[in-house]
Length: 115
Length: 115
Image 1 (cartoon, rainbow over the protein chains, first blue to last red):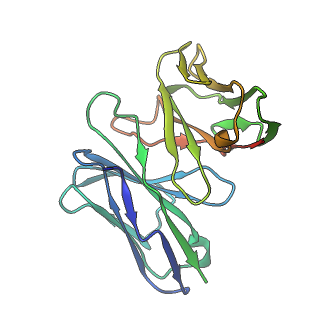
Image 2 (image 1 turned 135 degrees about the vertical axis):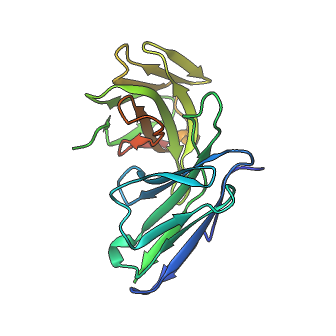
Image 3 (image 1 turned 135 degrees about the horizontal axis):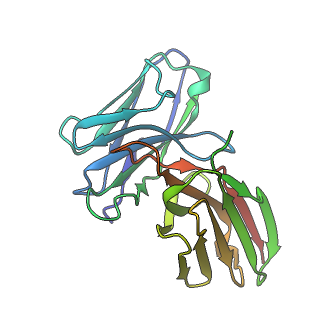
């Protein structure tokens, strides 16, 4: 199965620590998205890459958040100086740049708990 | 204000019953997707609709996109316990800007099918 993969699946960290998550998209998908989902809510858009270029960032993405996709393949999302409000499921999705590019395929997510 | 309103929020039914869940907005979407999500996992794409009035069938599931592309419904025939999960609708806004492919999600309908 060559779906979207995310690592780690779970992360528990103490307030103030930095964390980094990784996303490997479906092969040859040139668009990659990060979303955040809190309990009882649908996913909320954070940022979007086309190849290695970060083309859009949500206002939800504070200065403590940074995302990269250095070679246009995998992506990382780093949160610096974590706060309890950062506790959420972080979801990665990818889509092709061809027809039906609106179809986004999600990974299993990384569950972050900040204590 | 939630751009996509889903109803009902919770639904508990007996195996074999039929059900319909709704996704409504005052905004126009260029495409709309339905996902199913299980606890601790990422959303799984069920269907994409792009044309106003479009109806798609996937086994016991029937999806409809409103004529004005502002609303959608999901109907399940003869629900089974395996249908249990969180059903999310998500759309790409028409006026989201050139090159923007972010999805806007509803909060979801949590469905429980009791054997």
